[in-house]
Image (cartoon, rainbow, N blue to C red):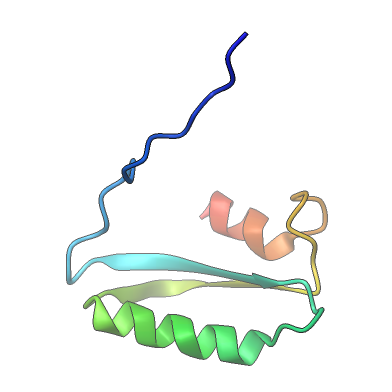
Length: 80
């Protein structure tokens, strides 16, 4: 049986400038800094001409990415 192979090109289109977006930031706490990640995301969003939907910033600190268990920020973003 062959394994799934992801397409080599992006499977989504980036939002157009002027779009409102939701932002999720997660870091495991090991050699990572949430403040620097948030700062980089602010810059990245601004450079693309996007704005963050009101209440659209979600953060999970010191959480593993291997599961959604205990990632309240992620779950709130999906609910929104």
